[in-house]
Image (cartoon, rainbow, N blue to C red; front, side, top):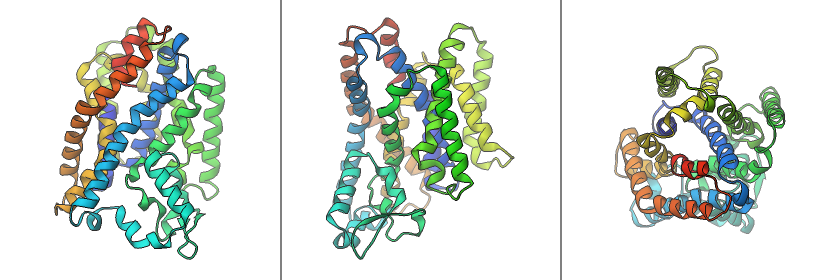
Length: 369
């Protein structure tokens, strides 16, 4: 599924640099993929001697935080050392602190520093405003009418979705090892909440794809897709031509989603990602180039705003191509000099457990999770 993950990351970049891409749908597709992989590793990797909540959580944090902190530091250095970077950066970055810093209370500063460093609760910045009279945060139904917007104080603004991922990781071991019935009940509950919200003035951004209770169902759909893979698809031989056809459909759908305007285009796309995933995973899990391409998705996602701001500072008018190329190159460098080293540490921590199976060992380099 590496190609799909890569294409989804590129769609997010395009949504921030052009009018194409449809980032919100790409993010929700990522949530489904995340649910699939997390269920897989909890059931096939973190078992027996490795059945440790701390081992699972700390390995997830090692997967995300070092790359995030590296890009955060690079963003700070660019803001401090490159003339005009803050003025050209979008959103505001350090320019927001320069303009409004004297208005902020201690608790607001603490919140902003904590969320920038720890990622947790970055999603809540889309549900908050700042009072310039008191400097304190307050709840808002619509962040678009606040001034200044709290989310623009986040240096890596796209990390709000990683905050939702982290929440899912914290609760995943308590949900994903349950029987199908409990997972289905949780999906229905999340779906009903989202439907209720959309019909009661909670269907706009950020509620429509940034509110965790509404988004939980996408993670859990990925979990159901894994269970279908484990109990059905893993045991049958699917003709290669069918796998290639399914991959072509979902890849093409992902690329051209933003120019498709037929009824239920969104629902059909989510259905395709969900239902094709077991087949795509079985078909691509042993393909090295697909694995490598998939590994680029997270660093592309976390570096693309920095690359976009650097391109804008350099006076580039059409940001899409330089941002995509810059993000890909930066991602390869980050994986080569940092990601691969951290991955060896993570896998060694798992292999040190007495309960890791041969299947789990075989999966380790494949899924990069």
